[in-house]
Image 1 (cartoon, rainbow, N blue to C red):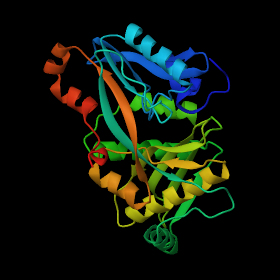
Image 2: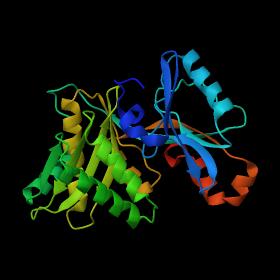
Image 3: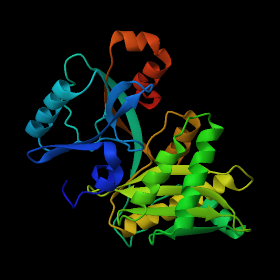
Length: 295
């Protein structure tokens, strides 16, 4: 594996089940595993926003053909922003239109353009005694808050999370130079909102691991935490901030009100009809079209 890779393609993200397919100057980062304990699965790497499909059209077509011939019966692959518009899914696969939300970051020292309401919320949080820490030294306590609040948020929504797998991933990537963490603390030093951020090779900063502890200041804490992260991303040379998108309407509205514009993302999925019939909820989750792309 190339030593210069970062983000979702990096070896730190891969663990033992990661695979990196390369064709000429193109690549695709995937993971092999099992679904419902028994069925082999090829997918976007766990917690990665997408497979970082890159390269010219010919390389991407070769990777698509390899996907069509080598993938097991069940596969879920998120292509990413560099997928060419003309690229079509392998025969027999379902293409699903999803979305993320992004906003541009100006070159430093120009200020990041934020909505007035967000600037006001950030100022109020700081005036109330809140503070924000941005860690690039990979402090275990800071990343521990990221993991804890991410777990709290998913548990609040009733979402299953393999805790040991996430812990292992965060320990690996926290040491990488292309990650940083942002944590907002209330006046008593309690972590109220946190985020783990990933800087991709294309100059995009991804809000990859968000979390919030509910309380009177939690909304403003999240705003202040993200504002600080945007400025840090800008200082690292990023030109785009990617909120990651969300199928949760409330979360997606929060990103939209930050200035995040909906951008399309494509997902390719395949599974036998018998699997679709036996596990309809899972299949609907995989193939759910983004509400932001419906209009």
